[in-house]
Image (cartoon, rainbow, N blue to C red):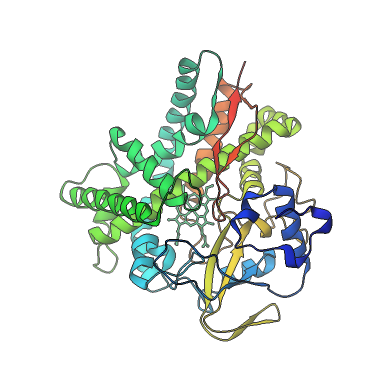
Length: 420
Ligand code: HEM
């Protein structure tokens, strides 16, 4: 695609084209502005994945306006998740195997979420607060000791390390296995980027390895409970019912993947935005207590680490006047909802004082699947930026990011940084 913002038309926009996502970000933003301004819900064909064993699906409608995303997300009876939450279709067993509860509807979803939520109560999140602070401090001390010339890759050494080490620690994964978890996560969310995933088979092999690892961990903690959330989840009961090791294995994949790459992405984009907007950085660093809450929400809005999730219409219905047939796929583009000019004043500006309402949709737009780890992610981001402004306030991004090639995660693979 070699078009510029000025001559962009609807016919130029193909949200299934990986080139669109790899292309210039201002063209992408312009495309979503145009889609938001155009009445109706445009239909897109699905991308053909070369060596996937599954046939190409029937296509999807794109939801780009905040209001439509909000409506669909909060009406799970009309727009379900049980047929898959990614755009492409997989057989039902595989949906649950890979997606766990993100690909389920009630009552199955409710049962599973009630059990695993026991690992994410405010009490559990508060319990890890001290751990998050200690890790953030340790990470910054480590980079200063490791890089005497005061420059390193921000993603590898800073933003990826915190969420990875926290979730592994919470789950009771030993430190020597962190590297394997990091590799598996990169593979599963790196679909579409040849640096991470070379073939469909490779993806399947690595997912199975991760599943087997998790199942063994779950079985072990049921037999020998320890002070970690794996033990809490394996012991939890809802109506006399416990998680099976298989269910835990699938949930583990969702949790570790969902919790790692997203938070890393938010911290990376956040550091980049604070470097590019020194007035906002000074405001935050100057009065962290006052601004931290809205600043973290603004970073998630501005970055929107998870680009989309899908729902499927369960009956003939309509969205804002546009008819949608039973079985049609609708895809919520959170990145676009978060830049909706009807909802956010000056949406392209990075403004850490932006009011919390109307809510940004980076963690989802409400409803039963709202991000289970939102409070943990907010806590990790807050603690990381607090630690940076205390112990390394001169830390800044010095070059262009290497973006992940993905239509699903707005990831940053590498980001050079330096400090004085
Ligand atoms: C900035 C970081 C994060 C972002 C932007 C993010 C974003 C999201 C989004 C958009 C959803 C789907 C919401 C929906 O369909 O309504 C989601 C679901 C989920 N997230 Fe997060 N997430 C983040 C961090 C985390 C963390 C740290 C964890 C756990 C350690 C986590 C665990 C989950 C789980 C388990 C689900 C599925 C919930 C369900 O289906 O009921 N996320 N997240």
